Length: 411
Figure 1: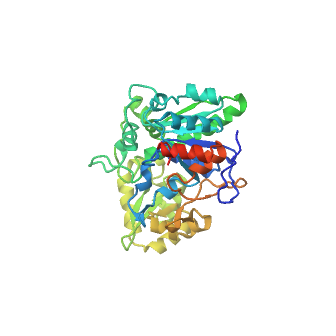
Figure 2: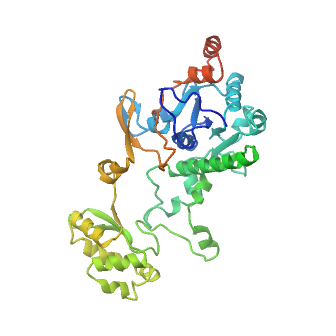
Figure 3: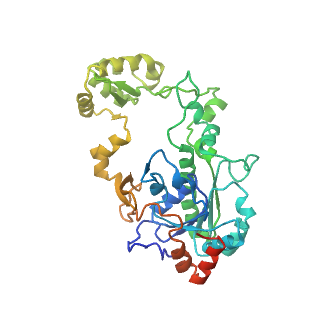
């Protein structure tokens, strides 16, 4: 493993359980870079290589901007050092090789075969650094007939079975309001990288992590596959409920607000029945068991909705707290920022973003009791760390940096 020598650009002490690791990040947008964000969050030194002309398109993405700046980039590229190199040139490829020699991991999310065309396949890189862990994120994986195809989160979510089961039963499939497939693939890529690091401690050898979007989505599909293959049951879109999981739905209050109540376990439903003033429901054969309630979902949901409509939201929440019945508001971003529990745990923190100012973003998660990680800085400017990394880490002098710039290899 290598020392995170240059991570301290602002005089900050680098903390986190991975603070002794270095990752070189290639690729762009979400599926790969979110893996880099997670590893950087946990303390790894992340050196992100971008094209010198265009940079990562995510720099300009997002519904809203502040002073012309993306509100997505400061989160997605936090804790990363941004350098530039034209990877289509021999000089740019040489930069990658020199960085790999002094790094633990290389992350990429190009279409399979791209690294090999650039002479940067694992057969080449592993000779430079036998302990290197190559993390590869793609739509369909590195092998199989679909591997060469371009793949995005939406496609992976469809192929992995998620899209089919999201939405109302009488409409076309819906989607989550986020790029869930990308985030899942990046999370599995991170998990795979950490497992490979553990293996490397025993063997001294690196390996390739092959994380596809569609398989990452498929991994979350519970028992959907054997339900069909063995039982002949095809899960369908069921709107706001899960089949046979009752009660677990959003219910109205007197003022028309909505509250989610989840009491599908037998013991919890007994508490809900008591809260409703109808303790006899817990012994009624139609509702007494998990299976019985699942068979009578519509009837039970209607009964709970009629009861919840007699309460104002605040009073209903207090009542359910007293009765120990799980419940929750359906939060927007505004609700999250104002919530006292979220504030107490610092789930959202403010980070200073140059040119924008105070910037609220999700904190690093999960929390660590000892090796507490931190957000050292927000997403950097294009090529902000080029001189620092290539000069301090690779030993390039001013003349070499100027030569690379004159050729357009770096910005």
